[in-house]
Figure 1 (cartoon, rainbow, N blue to C red):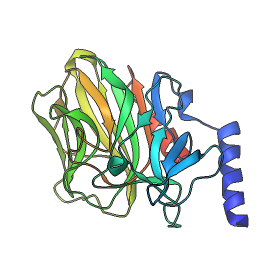
Figure 2 (figure 1 turned 120 degrees about the vertical axis):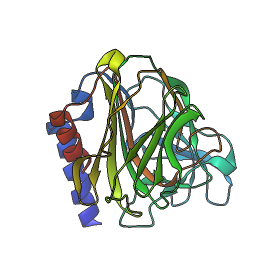
Figure 3 (figure 1 turned 180 degrees about the vertical axis):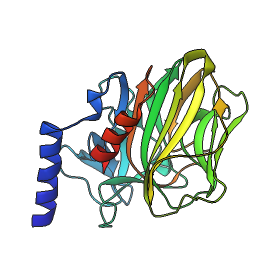
Length: 262
């Protein structure tokens, strides 16, 4: 318990005296680790009254999560009202406590769809652990708009239905049961240059994939942990999802984010 209190104290100190993701301009959405999360059912499916929350420090293992509030106040809160689709709260593992667990059949909707315009730069930061790396989406909207780990060698994205963008490595792989920070970026306006960076599991800000990719189409996101409702749902754990709209993160920005998240 003392170690946990010390760790929480360090986090609080870092957040009040050091870098925060909001220090980078154009922050549009932030579903934040251990923050703004509520559960309205327990592991047995019984209704909770009052609901459990991270704010009240009342969350319990396997609580069924109905809300993950957007830290920015921009109304991109993750919600789920169907019991069978609700992710679960994990505190049972010392390796990755205080996280949302998605078993491969769970997902959340966004209260407000994230609409990224054509030719608009963006950066999407996710802190994720996969327990399966076969076609498991981190976010999406439909068959024309999604981002997923496609296989151990890489990721697949589709923006506006204009073909697949495949970020594939010849020999490096994504492991299960390992936390990664994955940053997907578009820059240069109408050119739509795409980049993917992976940090964690032995990789340090690794540019993933050897093929230059471009896609300047409009991008819509209204699902978390699925490509569309009940499609390619994530199998694993989520800590943070951070979206910057109208900004491509620099190497210095990425470094600050890795240090903050770690």
